[in-house]
Image (cartoon, rainbow, N blue to C red; front, side, top):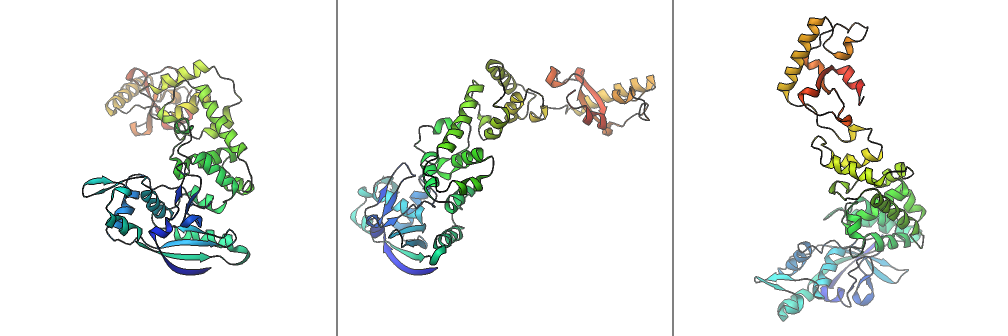
Length: 391
C-alpha cells in the first residue's frame, strides 16, 4: 500500500459537489474526480440535525476535522473516499444549502452567512492521505484498509462491512432498493422489519431471509449479478404473506424472523378470520406476557404456550394456602400431596412434598380456558409439573 499526504481546501473538495437525496446513487466532488460514496461505502448517516451540524460548527470554530483517506483508483482514473465520507458529505450539503446551523442564535444556511464565514468554511484545509493498492490484490488491500480505518467514530455494522467486502453491481442495486429512505415501500417494511434504511437493516433482513441465514455465501455467489429480482421477489412475497394472514398490524410484529416463519408455515391453509381473531384475543389477554410470541403461536396451531410466557401463579400467600389445604387433605387420605404422585404406584405415592419442592399449576390449562386464579390452582411436585406440559 502506497500513501501520499496532501492538503485540500473544502472549496476544492466541494467543487462540483453532487448529492442525490435518494442516497444510494452517486455522490461526487472535485469536479467529478472524487467519488465520495464508492460501492463499498455505507450510506450517508449524518443527516440528523446533530452530527451534520456538528461538522459545520467544528469548522466555524477552527477545530480540526481529523485525517481523511482517499483511494487512488488508477483503473477508473478517479479518487475515492476511503474514510471521511460523512464529514465531506456534510460539508458539501451545507455549501449547497441543504441544511442550516445556528449562528449567533439564528438558523443560517450557507448562503445566509456573511462573506467572512463563507470564506472561512471554503478555505478550511483538510489533511488527506491518498492510498493506492498495488498489484493483483489491490482491491482486497484497499477494502482491508477501509475496514481498519473505520474502527473509530460510528463503527461499521455487520452489513456495512459485508457491503464493502462484496461490493459490485449486486450490492449497488441492493442499496438502491433497500437502503433508500425515499422508497415508497419503507412504511410497509417498517411494520415488520427494524430500520433504519441508511444503516442497511432492511437489506440485512432481506438477505437473511432469501439466503436462509447464509448471507455471506449468498452475497459472494451473486456479487456480479446485474439484477436483484430474486431477493426483491422473496422479500415482498414474505411481507405479502404476513399481510394476507393478519388484519391488524401490531408493534410486536416488527423485527420477528418472518422469513423463517414463512418457510415453516406458508404451505399451510388458514382461516384468515379465525387467525386474526385469535391474534387479537391474545394481544388483549392479560395473562400473555410475551406478545411477540403470539404470531408464531397461532401460526403453529396454538400448541406451544411457552411462546407466550403465560403469567404464572405469583402470589406467595395464595400458594401457601393451596399447599396447606392440599397437604392436609392428602395426609387425611394417606396419599401424596401431589395429585399425580397420589395416583401412581411407585415410592412417591404416599410422599408429602415440601412447599419448595412443588410448583403451582393450572388445573385446567390456560390454553384450554383455565384462569390464573386460586380456584384453578393446584400444587404439583416439580418432576410431574415439568413433565405435564400443556396437558
